[in-house]
Each structure stands twice: as C-alpha cells, then as structure tokens.
Amino acid sequence: MAEAVSLNRAIEYFMDSLMGRSLQTRNAYYRDLLQFKLYLVFYEPHTLCKGSSDRLPVLREELDRAGGRIVDTRYQKQNSRVEARPRAVLDEFDCDLSRITKETVVGYFGYLESMRRLSRNTLSRRLASLRSFLRLLVKEGYNVDPTVLEKLDDLRIRPERSLPIALDPDEARDFLSVIDKPRDRAIVLVMLFMGLRISEVVQLNVDDIEEHTEGITFVGKGAKERYVPVHPIVKQAVLAYKKERPDVPKDDLGEPLFVSQHGRRIDPSTVRKFIKRYAREADTLDARKRRKLSPHKLRHTFATLLLQGDVDIRHIQELLGHEHLSTTQIYTSVVKRDLERAIARHPLGLTGEKGPDRP
Image 1 (spheres, rainbow, N blue to C red):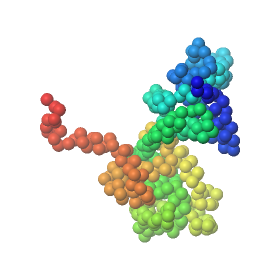
Image 2: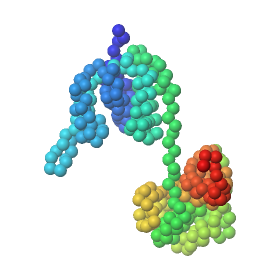
Image 3: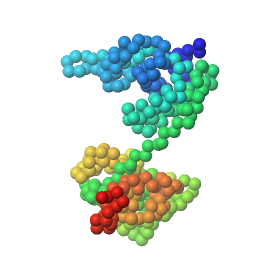
Image 4: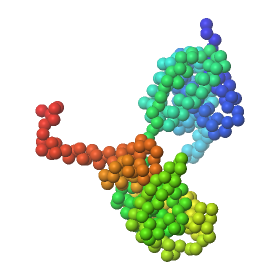
C-alpha cells in the first residue's frame, strides 16, 4: 500500500519553507492551500484520511456564518453575538495527497471557474500557489504523483483584460464644466487632448507649452522618442493659467509648468486627489466612473475618443508611446458597441435582403 501523505503536515512543511517571505505573501499561499483542501473535503471524498462525513453539514453552516471565508470570527448580529468557526471545523479533516490525480486538479480549477466564478487573476494566483506547493513536495520526495505537477505546469489561464474605463464626449464635457481652477483645467485638458502619463504631465516645464508651440517630444523607455502635438485648446488653457501662475525657482528638472500651492512642482498625488474631487461633482458620471476616475483613466479617454473619431490605431499607438500594438488594441473593445451598431445598419440588412438562414 502506498504511503499516505498528510495534506495538513505538507502544508505546514511548505509554510516553513516560506520563512523570509513577507507575511502578506505567506498568508496568500496559506489561504489558497486551505481553499484546495476545502474542495477536496467536499468534492473528493476518496482523498479523506481523517474526519467524519457527518461533520460536513456543520462545516457548510460555519462557512455560511463566516461569509464563505475560512476564518474563525465573532461578530454582532442584531442583539446577539455570533461566532463562526469554519477553520476549526476544517482542521478536523485531513486528506491523503497520494490519492490526488490529474483529474483532481483539473476538476478543482473547473470548479473555481464555473461554480465560484473567480476572476482570471485569482485563478492564476491559485494555480501558482498549488504549483509551488506540489513542486516542493515532489522535489523533497513526497509520495505525490508527479503527473499531477506536470498537469499543473501544462495548465494555462488566459490573463484577464478588463475594459478600460473611459469618459464619452458628453461625460468629458460635463467633467470639464465643474473644474473651476485654471491650473486644474489646464492639467486635465493636457491629459484629454494629449494622452500623457501623469509622470509626464508633472514633469512639464514652463517653456514646454508657449504661444507658438506646435508639439512636444517625449523620451520614453530605451531612449525612444515620441512627438505629441499640442492642441489649440490645450495651448489656450495653459496660457490662461500662466497669467496667474506664481513664480517659483527651478528644480532638478527645470522651471515647473504646473505648481502646487506650496510653490513647488505639482505632485502626482495632488492631481489624483483633485480629479477624484471633480468627478464627484460631475452629474453625468455613473457611480463607478466617479469612484474610479484617475489620471490614467483620462489617458484611456484620450485613446478611446480618438478611436471613435476614426483615427488609425497605429497613430494612437505612437501618440501613447506603446511599444506593442497589442497594448493599444484593448481600446478597440471599448468601441465594440459602436461597431455592432454599424453592422446593424449594413445596406443589405436595411433593404431586407434575405440571409442564408432566413426563410
């Protein structure tokens, strides 16, 4: 008979191997491994080597009390104090890792994706945790089927690419309408009309945008240069701000264009704060955009609006300073609904032409 491998003891051994790693990293690994154990206990009963099935309903009840988290806790509910002990109940169980197979781990990740509906990022972290755990056990000679690790190494979870938040033209106009300070307005217009990174905005010097300026050349990674034209609206806003801009001494980068109330080059955190403040005042923004709007979201807005205006995506790539076109192509998903409307207006469809599967 094959030697049993206690999951509980293996987890302890693995956690000891992480000494020197940050507490946050250790806790993340531990939570992921407890989730794997929970799956085995509930859905792979043949792996159990300790614990009674009679306790499974109790474990479910305790998990419900704790909101699905494997953590012992106490909280106040109405006039009574509730205690939840899912971790303590789960500790009553142990599993034999020598009984897990390739099908076990495939089933686990299928469960996480279909039943738990976890994000791709979370799935990737769970996979990395389990892979590191079993890799150590195999390396140390534990009685674990090596084909399980091979299967984990073969598993690939496609990275999640969420659509960037961007303002539509009406929202952008409404956002601009609530900005009452010339400096803040000039900064926002620079981002909306030039698509600059916040680090590039705060590094602008007073002579970068003047009355006859047509564009600015930025130096990015690998000393790669990109040229960004200065829109007349941006120029007008910057010149208006310069009339009230206080005189400040030069710093290591030169004479700053945008100045804080403390008489220094403005800090990125200051820009983020006033964008959040103005977003709360813009009536047309939904709750998510009010909460999430940031300098980088204004950069997203710049790219999305240009794409909606039929600007070639390669030109947008150049303006943003993206090295790879694939980075810029995420903005094409934002205007997918516009493309669908365009297809719906196909001339053959409007004239009632019958398609191949129409009667």
